Amino acid sequence: MDSRRDSTDGPEDVDAAFAEIVASLERDGMGANWPDPPSFDEPADEPVAAGIRPEGQPRVAVPEPDDEDDDEHFVPPDPPPLPRLRVGTIAALVIIVVGVVLLVVPQLFGLSTQISVPVALVVLCGGVGWLVMRVKPGPPPDSGWDDGAVL
Image 1: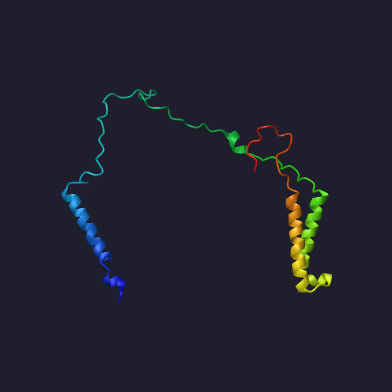
Image 2: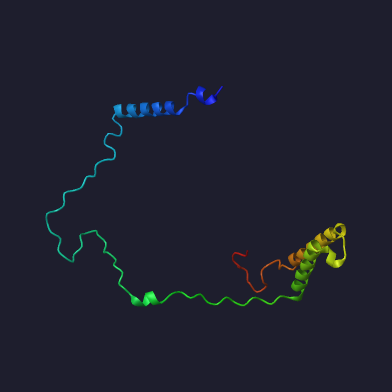
């Protein structure tokens, strides 16, 4: 019982149906002149004077060679220096490092893994929480009434 053999939508049936559709369209005369042959107006026998452009035609912009542009390129300014870390930020980072060390090498502190894993996770969460709590909640006080898009 192969469902592909029993199906009437096989490739042969699709090809036959497509050929039937195309034949009926050709009988109706659809698509006989498609695409339409281009119809060009006969050009005027009058020669166009040199230096005068035909009416309605824009001027062709030809870039002039400029050797100075090739030598110059954009040099971005140096980035501003990183701000100094505050004591609270350094303490939170140290707590996170201690939590990672407790998680990876608990024998360094003389603890078993049964005790060190929960303690390490609590220490890690405490360090991350401390960093999150230090994030400034709003725009700077001197930003004015329209501070634009604050991300």
